[in-house]
Image 1 (cartoon, rainbow, N blue to C red):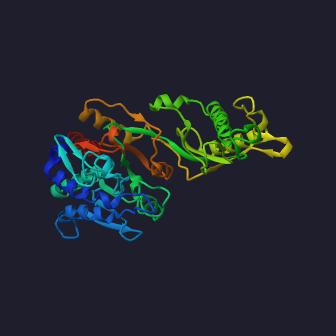
Image 2 (cartoon, rainbow, N blue to C red):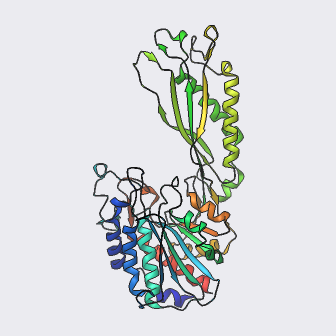
Length: 435
């Protein structure tokens, strides 16, 4: 086991930083915020391809099999395979996505679209999520290609497109799964490399984006008794909805086992109305937000319950708490009733990784060996694609070597030392699975 780790050695820092510099230089063009910003992941593919090509079967320089799979122009995925000697024995690193969230240079203390170095800090959009991981796994595959190490396991790396916008389908890993191109990865652990802080992330949350629309009656604010105030209706109805949600979906006992930072939550994040004067009670308003759901509850059950709550409030709108002596949601003399509706955008389910699997075992041992301790954690952030992979029969485990503190944040950076430890963890995983 030790021989494999010795042969793979430590991360080649100069090579890694050079590759990352090239990749971060493309980050401006792989921002994912359609329709304005459509990423061109093939820009990143080019740098990964060029790095691996000398060790590939394409040039005859090595054993790496490199396959560019594209479903849309300029938006490719890259599957890199280092063949093993035992058919069906597989180890895979997946999830290193080649798109990023948006960055506004005026908000940053440095240029987000070029790599800058401040001591151990490697700074730029994508260094933590997830272009740093793209470069890291590329260096691992490159080292395998250089050493031509004899392994029983086939090691596969899948660099994917379009992870940052799950509302657009048929571009990245979902299309690869549909086409059966990842089926053979079921032969061993699949490590999804897209989290942070060097510890195994064993649970993620589901997400239900919701929108509540409230209808009242517009009137002068000096005559509030002639209005139905949709803002007050919204505040009171949302309070009732949240109270019922937390009663029906309380903290689950499994959340402690998985170390979730929070239980399931429902909260508003946006409020809008059509506009008008400050002396005018509006006719309508909209409150939007999300439910973050631990994987021990069903997103369909929650949506059904939220619709049920809304229907019951509408039927009994006059019983809802009001704000002051003339606040009301019914005007009988005008045969008017306030009302609310709920709609949902695309939902995703959370995942609880298998804590008894071989993948989890080797990830924990490797982390403890390299980092010095292992403390798995869970969050109600979403990784929409891995639940589908688990449901398809993959042994999915998740990890990452950027910094949660800068994840999707302005002034994003990662630490070179963390990436070096990530490389050694990968080497340890390979070594353990060869035993």
